Length: 528
Ligand SMILES: Cc1cc2nc3c(=O)[nH]c(=O)nc-3n(C[C@H](O)[C@H](O)[C@H](O)COP(=O)(O)OP(=O)(O)OC[C@H]3O[C@@H](n4cnc5c(N)ncnc54)[C@H](O)[C@@H]3O)c2cc1C
View 1: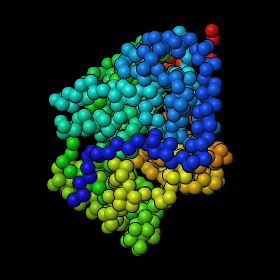
View 2: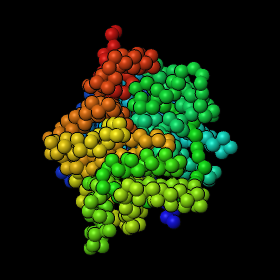
View 3: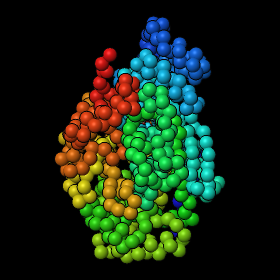
View 4: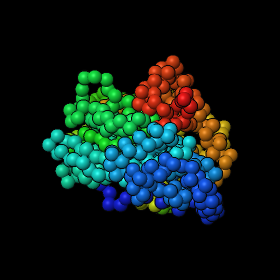
């Protein structure tokens, strides 16, 4: 049995990789821009009296003014050209909730935009401070406040990475099963603010399933605790905590969170099956769940994604794997628990597969490489999952959600749309994200050359078209990235008149509209 590691010894800095990936010419342009910013800076500081207030309230070591330091906060993982980097006017490095509160009170008084950010791995520009102002780098708030093993909870500051949370609770034989691929860098606050998906969604759900309580600082500087402490659920009051999922830092800056933990399973078995159609993989998953099996992870990869693995295999071994040419979908499933239980469940699941024309992937190397790429970001043994990719181009994705019965139909629309916009297709992943039931988050991914403004523009058009199409399919525009400024212009399409209630909620938490302006809603300039 292949037991996948539960933790990983190496923390990858994606930001560093991102900057190193940039070719010489791009890095040279960045440096030119930095010099330009230096020249601008001297003038602008003199008029920014709020910066003096920030320095005296927080201390100068917590306030970054140097343009070269601010520059890296001008972009995240979203496809953008170097010209589209928008560094904030000032970066704040808070240590405590009190620091955040002091900073917001100053911003509130001067009506300065405030954008919170974590690891900057967001894929749609959520943490990019498009209106300038203050950027709050929450990664300096990464302390563990309390681990309570008996009640299976952890209280952490919101800038802790998901991996740091797991490192802190592993000695108690506990883990936080909310695990996006980016867990080495992405933070607790962002996981909540983006409503991310997770490798283990089919068993443990999305972030709200493990979020018990959160502390925020609102747009007026008020500190609020939202949630139900260590109780697992509540029927009391309104569920204001749930508003934080997907709020993108527009309602408050999340400063601490109490998260529900789970016992680490003793073993895990990952397998892959290929199907002649994507719809057959969906029907199979439905059957597995109907049988009462307890899946820990279930991910469908389209034919194009499957080809990355067969291609890498052939490169390495000089021969094709035994995967048949008729395979149109690759399904990865995992079971976890006591070895005997896992073995029984696996056996039954593989027996059911015979009724769906499925074939097991015999090459364990492919299965383990997929798992490594998903879970540990370690691409061995193929070194690189996507040959020659990522060096010159980044991946960009749309994240729509469609009814399960229309997944295959939507897949074809994705291919059609990407081809129409002349984008190189990576492929589609569909991840089961609802505990013990069918419900997918989708990643429709393409390569984007961020040095090519026309390609970046075509990516955005592709993204918008696919998001709108998902609504026409009776689905949703976003399943794990949220809206950012990208979907803000056409949010009404999905939400209709309820958008005005959302605006009222925003106003209640952030009356001056200073929190991450332009995200979710187009920016409203408040009446003076
Ligand atoms: C290689 C790679 C793999 C990825 N894998 C996954 C995956 O498996 N599943 C998935 O869902 N996503 C994935 N993502 C997307 C991304 O990692 C997530 O959206 C993640 O939540 C971003 O975390 P971050 O700390 O980098 O946030 P940032 O990019 O810094 O910020 C994201 C958003 O959260 C807000 N925010 C951050 N901190 C706070 C706070 N304390 N309070 C309020 N708002 C806050 C920001 O304003 C912004 O709107 C992946 C990205 C990459 C590059």
